[in-house]
Each structure stands twice: as C-alpha cells, then as structure tokens.
Image (cartoon, rainbow, N blue to C red; front, side, top):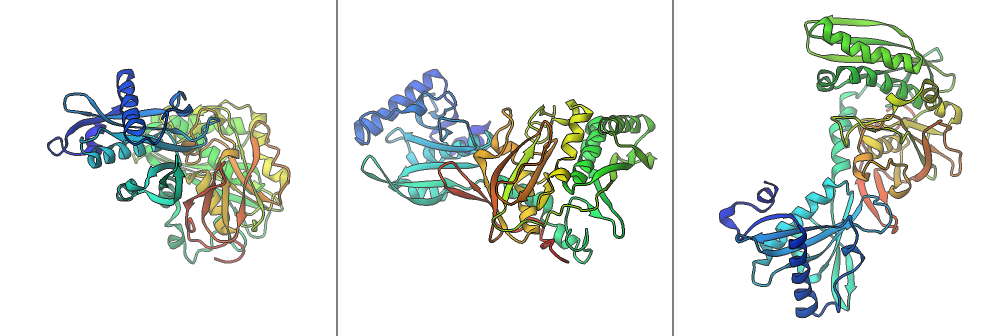
Length: 460
C-alpha cells in the first residue's frame, strides 16, 4: 500500500494512510482548512481560489485509525493554461493536536510522489516560515522569502532528479570507456554517426536492448532501422543501406525480428545489404547503416548564443507496453513522410544537430552542448510536445523522430514534413542544461557534462 510505504510502520503512527480524497474527504479537508487558516490563524478571509475549481487539482488526505480526515494537501499545475510540468503544492493542513510533524511529513512525501508521477519537472510550495525546517528535512530547498497575506512565508522547491538520473544511467560512463578511441574523429567526437575517412560515407551503428528484442521482436526490428537512420539524418546524410546482426533462440524467433526489420526497411526505402544471423543464443539485434553526404553536420558546431530548435513528430501515441518511455509516430507514417523527416537536417544544414536518443530531449541537448563546449537552456513551455504526453515523460522518452539543432537565432527550422519545429532555448557559456519556465525562473536539469567525452571541435 502506497500510504504505508510513505508514512512508515502502523505501530509508530497515529493515522492510517494517505490517499486521494473522495467527495466526502474533500469536504472534510476544506472544512479543516477553513478552521485553521481562516478561523484560527486569520491568514485569509476566504481560503479558496481558482485551484480549488481546477479539475486537474489533486487533494491528498491523511486519515486517523477511525477513518476521520486529520490532514490534507492540494497540488496541481501552477498555471491555468496548459500543464507544462510546473506543479505547486499548498494548503497543507493538519488537525490541531493530531501530531503535525508526522502527518505533515507524510502528506508532503505523498504529494512529491504524486507530482513526479504526473510528469512534473518542477514542484514548488509556499510555506509558512515556521515550517521551513520540516521541508528541509524532507529534501526541499529554499528559493527565497516571500510574504503572503502580510505574513512571512518561504518559497521552497523540491529537487526532481529524473532527467539527471536518466543521463547518468544511459551516457555518463561513455567518456571513460571510450578514452583514447576518438570515436568519429576530429570535429565529430561522440556524434550520431561517424564520417568514413577518405569518402563521403557516414556510418552509424546501434544495438537494441536485449530485453526489448525478447519482449517485442517485431517492434525491435522496426526500431533497429529507425534509430540508425535517424542517426544518419542528424548528420545530414542520405541513407544507402543497412546491415543487421541477429541472435535468436531459433529460426521462428529470428523470423519475427526480421519481419519488423524488413517492414521498416521497406517503409524507409532503404535496402538490407547483408548481415549475420545466429541461432541457439539469447536474443540480440544490432544494425549498421550507411549514408552519404559531402558535408556532415556535426553535433559540435554550436556556439553560445545559438538558438536551439526541437523538430519532432508529434503524431502517434505511446507504444503499447512502453507508456512514458517510447513514443511511436513512425510506424503509421507513409514512405514520403518518413523521407521528408530524414532529409530535414540535410536540407537546413544547421550549425549543429543531434538525434534525440535514449537520454531524452534534455539529455541529448546536454550532449550537443557538451560537444560544442558550452551549456544550454531549454524553454519547457515552447518545446513541441504531443497532447498525450506529460512534460516529464516527453522530455525523457525515446521519440519516434526528434532532432535538436543549433543555429543562429531566427534560422528556419528543418523542413521535416509532418514534424513540428520550434525555437525553444539557446546555447550559453558554461556547462549542463537548465530548464526555463514561463515565470522566468530556471531550474537545474543537468549540472555537468553528460558523456565526459569532451568537445567535438577537435580531438577529445
């Protein structure tokens, strides 16, 4: 039970659980709120506001062992417009004499869990100054003092490490592992593909996570083509063919993998040039793709002051079984639409480009900035995002097609057919990635380099 995880052993508490309020509990919570904030403290003449009527607002309540509401808190999007991943908590109240510290702490922890589960990447609360120490103990940080209804309050923020944790898990160890290899060569260290010396060829190679191959072999086959062609596209290269390496327990399973791969190759109009298949082994799949361009677009071409554009295909939906992690837009696109998206970077030729990878939009932006020797700021509200995805999920998922490009401000976005492009940030001096919010505040998403591979401007 979530409540017991959050509030501890039943033998150590004076209340039963924290849960989402039903209609009766909501009525009791509002009555308790009014008693404390209006009648006892005189903080408000009326403690209600627009958030109480917003259908997105969530109220969590704590009940005593008899089922009576002894505390509550509300939380939801900070603004009345679209939810951009900025949530606020407030109206935290505990029945006088009910053990405020334990109940209040449990409600705050539950609110944090709910907000992060709803895709929030920023979670703020304005708390009475007397409660600042409690919030510090719960992992919150102080932003600044504020005044509410003539009383001292503190604006506090809950650090949300979802983006940094993803970057750490997927990319952090690359620099040490690849030290001395100089992948991509001077000017292209850590790029999505590698220019082949002495030619106009660009090569890319990606493997699919074995658990995904085992679980969803046809989709794995499709994705093996998709990710490699997107890597070529990020460098402005036109694909000319792919090679595959498949490991399978038997021919039947290999057939399922290759069915997805062949479907994708046909949809993208790219021939399968050859490969290798082995039976009697655990599931595995990797693909190498070859493309051509006389002038590869580097991931390291950005400079402080360059505008960041996200160009993404917002059609489609979450892949069944991968909600919040993999967005599937490509499997429903026509060959002409897929070709238009793959050709976008090559047509626009921005200063720098990277295909959004397993590190998500923000992690990939961190890699582009790192390769360019600078930091980045992303405007969360202006980054293109599908209606069916929260900010937290979209900015950390693997999308079907999404490109980050850096160029002079005002440059036209890559002409990507059905994909949508918009300027949504800039490269800056320093390192890491910050998120900028509609109120002008910024929060740290990634505080340092992502891969540790150094800049791509020369040898790493």
